[in-house]
Structure formats: C-alpha cells, structure tokens
Image (cartoon, rainbow, N blue to C red; front, side, top):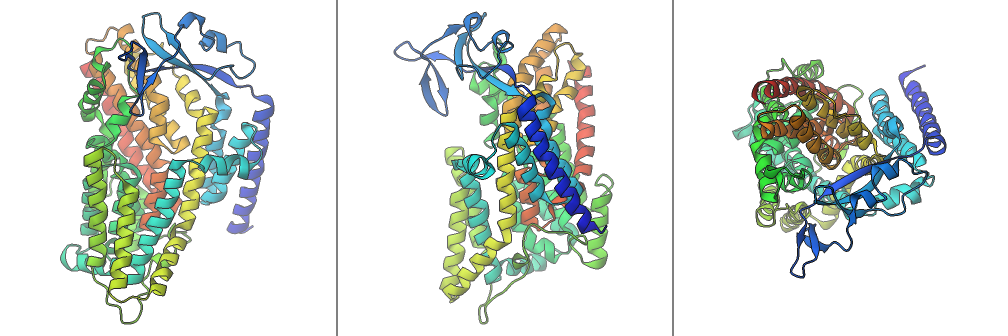
Length: 575
C-alpha cells in the first residue's frame, strides 16, 4: 500500500472512530456538573444597589442568595440527573463576599477526545482539514448536535469574533498579499532589503527576530505583521520556511508576556481576583501583580532567546528538523521539504507584474507603515489595536497607488483574486479550528484537566502541576481561553497551598504560580496544530503546517523544560 492510500485508509478509519466515540459519549457518559465561583469587584451604586462592572458597564445585581441556600453549590450539583434549572446565581459567601455561581459540566476523560482525535490525526496524516472536521464531529455528536452544518459550524461562526477573523485573514490579508504580488511591491521590497540590510540567511533571521520583538502586542496581530513583512526578503535570502515560521511564532505570544504593554494585563487581571488577598483586591493592584511577575516568565524569556540563537545560526537547542531544514535550504535552495503543502498558494510565491508596470519598494513600505501606525496608534489611544482598520487602510492604499501608477483595474482585481485563492485553505482551517475550540470549551475538557489537581499537594510541586495549563491550551488551541479556565481555579489553589504550608513569602509564591499558568498556556497554544497563531505563522511564511508544528515543538520543549526547573528552584529557594 503506497503512502497516499495508507493516509486515505487511516483518515477514514479515524473519522469512523470519531463518529463512534461521539455517539458513545452522548448515549452512555453522564455529564459531571461542577460548581464554578466567579468573583467580581462588587460595589454599591448611588442608589445603594449592589453592582459590578462587566465589559466596561455597571451591572446591577438584582438578588443575592445565601451560599448555603443556593441550588448551584457542589452539594446540590452532585445530585443532579439533568441540567440545572438556572444558569447562574449571585450568592453571599460565608466570609461576606458576594460572588456569582455558575454550573458547568464535563464528561471526564471523554471531554478530551475531540482534541485528542484532531491532534493525533494531524500528526499522523499531516492533513489538518480532515483532522479538524473529525474532531468537530466527535465534539458535536458528544453534545447531541447531529446537524454539523446548520447546527454547529454556522451558529458557532455566527458571531462578531469569527466573522472578524474571516474578514481579516481571508479578504484583507489575502487581498493585500495578492495586490503586492501583482504590483511586484513585495519583490521590490525584498530587493531593497537585500541590497542594504539583508546580506544572507543570518541577517534575514535577525531582522525577523527584531521585528517580532518590536511588534510585542502578541497573538495573531504580531504573527501576521511580522510574517507578512519578512517573507519577501527571507525567501530571497534562502531561509527555510520551517526556520521562519518558528521565529515568527516564537516571538509573538512569548514576547507579549515579557513586554506586557498591551491588552494582556487588562484581560488577565479580571481572572485572578482571590477573596481576602490584599495584593489582588483592586484592578490596579492586579495589573501591578502581573508586571511584578514578569521576571518569572521564564518560558517567554527563554523562547525569545532561543529564536535569537537560531537567528545567529546557533542550532544546538533547535532540534534535528530545523537543522535539516537549514542545511536543505543552504545546499539545495529548497525552502520546503519534499512533499510539503505550504498554506499559501503558488500565486503568492511569484510575481505577475503586467507589462510596462514598474514596481517600487515604497508600494510595500508605505502601506506597511500605515498598517503598523494605525494598529499601534489605536492601541495607544483606546487600549485596543484596530487591526481591521489597519489592514483595510493598507489594502486601499496599495490599490490606490497601483491604479494611480497606471495599472488597469482588471489587473488589480486579478491580483485580489489570486490573493484570496492564496489564503483560502488557511482561512478554512482557521475557521474549523475556531469551531473545534468552542466545542472543546463546551465539553469541559479544560475544566476536567484543571480539576485533576488536588489541594493535598506539596507546595513546591504546585508550579509543575499548574503546567497542566499547557495541555489545556494545546488541546483547545487558545491561550486566552485557557486563562479563563485555569486562573480562577489556580490562583485560589496557590493561595490555599501557600497558607497550608506556612510560606513566608506567599505573594512571591503566587507570582511564580501565576507565571507558570501564563507561560504554560503560551507554550501549549504555540505548539498546537489547531492554534490560530500556529496556523497563521505557517500561512504568512509559506510553510507546511505540520512541518512547522513538528519542527517548532522541539526547541519550545527545551525552553519549557528549562523554565520548569527554574520555577521549581525559585519556589524552593525564595518562598
């Protein structure tokens, strides 16, 4: 049996298994309901009504029930045989604090099956579309959702976040790349960089690393900006796509945790409130706690340092795959491995400039500077980067310049079409990954993993056990989603363990535990084949998705292993 036939049989077998697993869970595995307590900064408004802030707006709490009388306590949930009658309830805890109770559920180990099936199939077949669809089928059937199209994919994508992803990464990014390819702007920029800055593979990688550090907003924005900018001159300098995708990916979220002048602290602080902990009482104190913990972001620091070493061609900790990719590009000029399927199409790998049109590097630089200026400027002004505005302006400027220089409208439209075709596969993968992540959250896979932690553990072991966050992020493909699951459970657990063991510096201990969850989530997200940043790193650099995943996981694991040793040593020595 040849390799193609083997992959087809394997894919078919796993897909059938996905159906069977989903039907089995739906029919025979009961939901395990778990009490979740959400703490807010509750205050009295001018009318004396208890209120809290949600998404920047004050919300009034209508009714508060004594905790012992609530129907959503774990004691009541343990006796449930069906869905609770109410979705949430405000309660007064024994210590007088006001909190919100919500019932959530998981299926035990079976909650992890959609992610397990997807990731296993990705690694076995290197074909992410069928792998993601198999995981979606498993998750949907487990929840009793049998209409995959109308009952799962469409409603799960029918929200502002998903539509925004589609517009940004299919229309705006694809269109911009297509216009740059048609006008020859990307190639002209590559030629300019080659003449003045990029003298070979090493300088191309160093510039990529510097840009990754410069765009420290993190996540998809950094990935797209850096990947889009560096691909033209990196390809011309003969840098393998595995190296480029790793540098782009590993300087996105890791640097955002270290240079945290971005949206991360504002988001995370809302998740780490612990009743009775004075240094986490207010929003400003929690943000200060975030910044004070940065020296313990060992994985972020080591990951960024590791990519710098690779940029200088020091590959001792880069792993065999990256070393082989580097040698392949140097000796044969092949930027991808044999049999690779890059996530960007051939239309974006070459130029198709109309006769008589003279490309100029400013056609690339001016839209790019505008893009960066709008993204950074809106972040400074409003606290949130308007990425869609930035890419829309860059695309309109690129089109306007092309038309102004005499390019025919039909040629511009042809470039736009080629750009859309060039990223459509990656966009479909990204959309399916969003659906799978939502399903995984509903199934409670992350909640199940976190609940495996017990409170009767040695204090020095807790940071290592909290690295379970990297498994959650790897399984769901999201670090921010993992924060929402892990932090509300991990921070009270760290406070409790610290008190039980009578630690002298409990604030420092909680900083280390906080950094462990933060960095573990980043590592899991970065290495996951269903993560948006992983997919976009491969797409913008023109790399095969699974080549990127397999080559990146080795150096990332080196960095995480060293970080785990440092966290454990810090707890033992300083707390």
